[in-house]
Length: 122
Image (cartoon, rainbow, N blue to C red; front, side):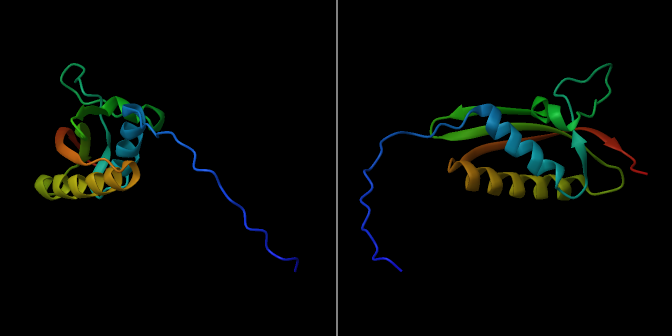
């Protein structure tokens, strides 16, 4: 082994900005992994029916707003029929808050879960 050269790294200034869209992606992907969730739904109901969003359009079921130093998030989901809705919502809330705070380093001040529909899964 040659002798180690001490490398001096200059500190580079700069900031990381996380867009609301990126936060919405984190939220959408996290929600899909939650027990009891069939999928994300569009925030507006079409003829009173919740439309399931495809994987590449998940962010349409998530609204992210900056709230001082933190985030306010609304999410719109379709859940599985026959399960306790409060349990599903509590699980979604804790997982989404954990993942968003871990990945963005921004606190989630408010997380509203809107259950847009209930669906039987085959």
